[in-house]
Image (tube, rainbow, N blue to C red; front, side):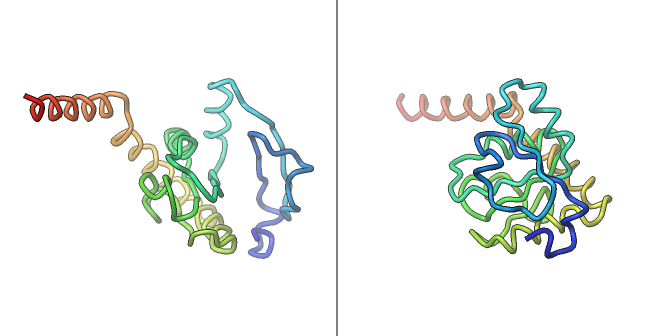
Length: 155
């Protein structure tokens, strides 16, 4: 847990989406429950304001929120399983914790936060990585090449 690592008084968590304060266990730090965020500008502002995004999903098929946060220059901490594995470069654009190990997830959060320069570097590399892999022009070129290969094989 983050407070056991000395960050309980230094960190604050903002939770958005479905969980409410009643749904969450004691986190050992200040928490704000923002509910669902449906406005894209507010969501981008929230991602940009965060020092780190934590995606503790046990199952994550793709990782849209991972990409959104990284596009806003925010490093992501997630479990080393599912979709985040294909998006996050461990210790370069975020932190991939041992699958389903909450202590390692907490260590990853602290690792991302403990040095401001590291946090900034992770965020800059996260944004550059997402731009290089998921920019609409990049994805469109990949689809075009795929369709061209399919058409060539069909001919």
